[in-house]
Amino acid sequence: MTAAVRVSAGRRAATGRRRFRPIVLWLVPILGLLFVFSVFPIFASFYLSFHQYEMLQPIKFVGLDNYVYALTRDTVFRKTVVNTFYYAFVSVPLGMAASLFVAQLIHSRSHFKDLFRTAYFLPVVTPVIAVTIVWRFILQPSQFGVLNAFLAGLGIPAQPWLTSARWVIPSLIVVGIWSGMGYNVVLFLAGLVGIPHEFYEAARIDGANSWQMFWKITWPLLSPTVLFITVTGSIGALQVFSVPYIMTRGGPEDASRMVVMWIQETGFAQFRMGYASSLAYLFFVVILVLTLFELRYLRTRWSY
Amino acid sequence: MLSNKTTRRLSAILVYLILFGGSIIMVLPFYWTLITSVKYPSETMTYPIIWIPSRITFLHYEKAWHASFPIYYRNSTIVAVVVVLANIFTSAMAGFIFAKYEFPLKGFLFMVILSTMMIPFAVILIPCYMIVAMVLKLKDTLWAMIVPALISPFGIFLMRQFIQSIPDEMLDAARIDGASDWRTFWQIVLPLCRPALSALAIFHFIWIWNDFLWPLIVTDSDRSRTLPIGVTLFAFQRWQQYNLVVAGSVLVLLPMVVIYFIFQRAFVQGIVLTGMKY
Image 1 (cartoon, each protein chain N blue to C red):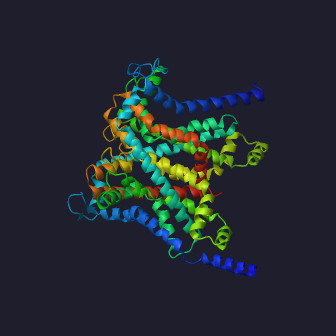
Image 2: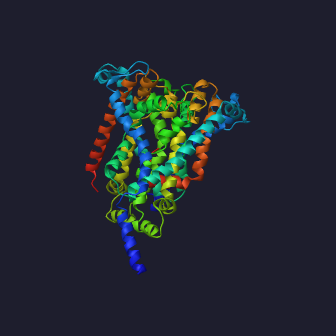
Image 3: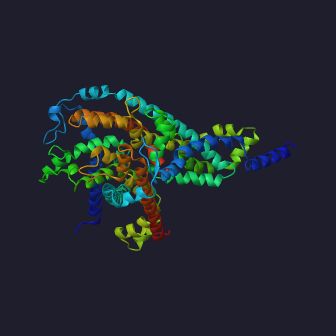
């Protein structure tokens, strides 16, 4: 009797899950906030991008004017796009190669693993502002800069790292790789631990050298990690803002100004909010296309 | 001809040399920061660099601390604590509902949440600012940084994935014993989610503590400035006073580094568990 009751109650509970329950109403405030601060702004920004809006004057429809201006006449925007691509396309592959190299070395030895992981990860948790202040002093143009002092020891003359148009982006790339590398090292280490020993042993019996083992076993089996780091890394690098904003403020002469800095500048210093929205949308399309391209290209190359 | 054993030993030495060299590059800037923050100015801008100062002082910390740092600390702490606690709750709640209940438009709503994760922040920056500053009139208050961050699409996504792996039978058993949906959530689901929630909490804390662009835009005065913004302004006004600026940056990084050393294991597990970038 009790057993029968319990069975039917159990069945009711199981089917009850399929029905509406009051707890679902909790989604209303949560999704409401999401709608106000994430969904609605996407459309609002699209709407604004076709308007002239400068906060104090009424909003005015201008059609495609903002986009046309951005693509044909805004030389600063063009410069920021070039800078941002330069930064992202060098720092992502270089950072990945460096962190895979380090992860591979840490993985190949049994001692000091935790120590190395701690050291390489430390910059990742350090607040960007602290990283930037420290590196600004390291990269000081005079002989008092830490890096220049080192170079002087090697007989290389002092370089104006952050004040020369030629060296400023490479300097930012070094800072970016230094501060983000530990994150990729941890991801690669997790990937390397997941590769079974037997694969390497079998390859060794077949006479493979370590170079062949890396390219035929390690690299293909790490492809999910590589894909993940490429996609999230380039999305992050293209949106770089705080490091150049604090370290160089875009200088010298826009040589290190990035796209997001220009959006912030046009929107919140010049108050051209409609125009800034159109820049943001153009930028979004670029990121989207690049991400889809990366996903497609890297996925079809590796189908494991 | 080297014997097999010697080559192996040599390669081991080479590997450790490279790894220790790399570790020094990672740690040396921190050491330089620490000693510069306690050096006397006379030993600061020297060539060659003085790596071991002959005497030290804490005067720079004292000066930096008195330049509004207590307010920045207070602001950063309030924002981070409220945002992290709220996110744990909203992410787990929404994740639970999406994982274990049926309701109209469920698939569509979840798709919407996923797609908002792909949008670069720069795209929604201006409308968000207009809502916070003009509609809600929250500019230059701590609420301006708290309200938009109360929920996170990524947190909801992560928690849904995690809660889906909890067997239905466990929840049904609780229901048969007469537990309400609410009680099932608090007493069964939340405790089971502890690993995912602690990863979420740590990463959200780092992210909100270090957030820069949004606080920069919505704060106007020390009343609401968080640490990163306060220190940036502090540095912009005093680039020539090396020791002072560096002492300020130590004050920002100290809490983060302490938290890192306490929760080191959770950090590493969290990255692997979530693949989260912050």
